[in-house]
Length: 76
Image (cartoon, rainbow, N blue to C red; front, top):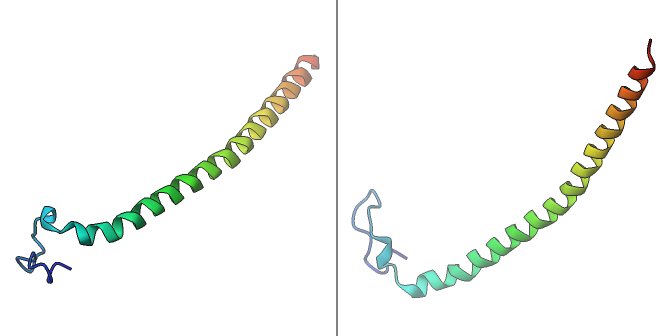
């Protein structure tokens, strides 16, 4: 792409990205947005799954600690 538009200046790839024509950027723009939305969707699903798991672990820990304190209160 850079060779076609004569933007490539040196071997170290020191070029101004603002000179890349929109026709090249437009092709990848839709893919980038699609991937971004997919990542957000996966993150939301993982958040909903792990929020329930975290709640279950918290309630379980609270119950175990409550029973342990109750048992300790019965010891003379």
